[in-house]
Amino acid sequence: MGRYISPDTIDQICQQTDIVQIISEYIPLTSSGKNYKALCPFHEEKTPSFVVSPEKQVFHCFGCGAGGNLFTFLMKWENVAFPEAVRMVAQKVGVSLSLDEKVTDYKQKLYQINSQVTEFFHQQLKKNKTALSYLYKRGFKSDSIDLFKLGWAPFSQSFLSFCKKNDLPQDGLKELGLTRTSSSGEIYPYFRERIMFPVVSLSGKVVGFGARVLDDSLPKYINSSASSLFDKGRILYGLHVAQREARKSREVILVEGYTDVISLHQEGIHNVVASLGTSLTTSQIRLLRRYVDTVFLAYDQDSAGEAATIRGVDLLLENELQVKVISFPGEKDPADFIREKGKKALLQAKQKALPYIQYRIEATTGKDEYLPLEKKLEIVNSLFFTLKKVKSRYQLDDMLRRLSQALDFNEESLRSEFRRFCEEKYKFSFSPTLKFEVPEEEEIEKRLLEVMLCSQKAIEVARATFSPDSFTSPLCRRLAQEIFLCQSPSNITPAYLINRTTDENLSSLISSLSLNDSSLEGFDLEQLTREIAQALKRRSHQKRIEQLRRMIKDCERQGEEEKVKSLCRELVQLRRSILI
Image (tube, rainbow, N blue to C red):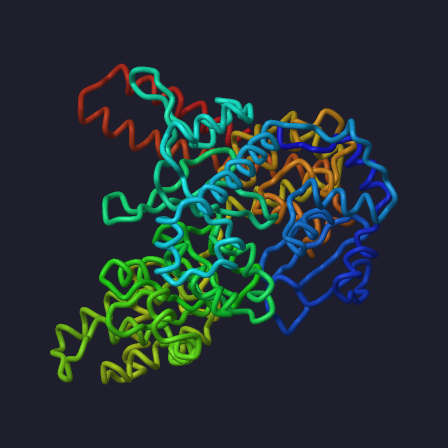
């Protein structure tokens, strides 16, 4: 399920593809030894850190971590799904994809159901004067209603009759959350007598719905339940129509709701998206990073909106995005503001947007002209938790300067206090990037995987001496499992492994290890594999020994003699194994 094209066909396409030739159609590549380099197209940089390997048919950016094979590159650049990327490459290299290779899988049927239901809701809206009148009063224009495919969910029987007439399968309707079953076994539609907002993926397919009542009854909004198509934490509403302008301007306005997106878009502000709910997720922010460097937060100007602003910022800062906050007077939301004041006024408000740290200072201090020292220290303490998330040295410098000026603190004293705060509570140093140290064990595990990616015999040695379950890093463990599960080690290449995963983090790990600068030339890779595996085993045994010592002490205190003897036997065996 989810595979449109057979693995054999994908391998055939890969064999006829030159990653350098095709990527160079999108960005200029410069020869650098046996590889090629370029400025990364997925983040802003001045020194090339984007490397393409013709030998291994992979790319990796050592700046932002983006990596993978040619299909991964096209998925990120063109914002398409894996099958579409494969078809694009197939067309470029002249490989024909016959119809019998296109699997009519379950997901495609679900997409078709959503498409038909969206059109049904849209036509129902056109017939419903009350619902249309509501939207027109809210300032929505006919063109916007058509562009965003807004709809109306009618009463139960009308929807069920439509589904029956069009032979829409009940299992698909239930999977998509469009119907539910009552305790008495009766099937009923989840969305009833509500304005419908289709949620559209980057590829233009409807994956779910949001719905709003016409009156003030609760809940005001409901969303589709999670399904194989819809995960509200991994999608941004409106991005399918905002992506071009967002990429061009490198900016996005992030709002709370569907109506905010539509209201701003119809007034000519196209780089606006909404999180489906007020809490941003890491997946949504990674999605934003593909397009922008700066995020303008334009949440509602009430207490809930202010709380949402604060919650989402730490994640944005962790992902090295610039954050500014747009404020609207009178607790208005963006939709109300632009409807009353117009596009020019909203753009002026955007121009006056405060850098996040300044916004937090003003939101915390309010209109107080004089703050007691206790209040200032309280502000500093709360903001230090946010500042520790900032990875850019320049951003951090600017934030600390603004904070010292706003609170009338000596800047050097504040910086010194921040360093102490980080070192004592969070154990990381004040450095240009403020990155957490990678545990040495994870580095050793990566070294083992790097060797395995270079040598079939190393894979055989590792398979015989080390279990994937022994890896402490979840990502390293998954890569080891993928390698060990492969029936034919001779087929294992970085590009091959990347084709077998949909996880960007795993693709990035594979590409980074395969393009690592550390040279393995001159090493006996089989022996090196044994030594690394043995080192990891020793570290694992040492950890277990420390754990056993603690357990033995606890059991001795509780008088559990038999358990003490058993633990001591295991301790002796582990000590002997380390000495062997």
